[in-house]
Length: 83
Image 1 (cartoon, rainbow, N blue to C red):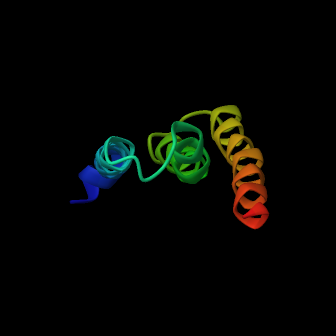
Image 2: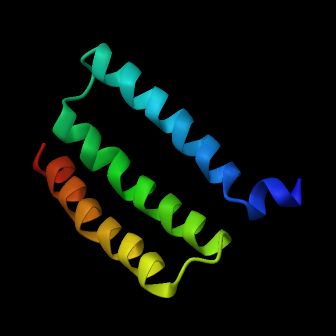
């Protein structure tokens, strides 16, 4: 089981589940593509940072994924608060 996490496959599984969830939400027109990006984007970025850390990627890749999550999160907050 530790190999499953150390290889980053646990994160891959979570990302696949999130992609299925996003496809269902898009297909049922519950959210627009832009809203999906803002809802799922920060989480995907954080998961990519976790995956990079698990597989031993260089710190710039981890920092890039972490940094990308913040503006998406702020845009999502602005969208939600504007309602």
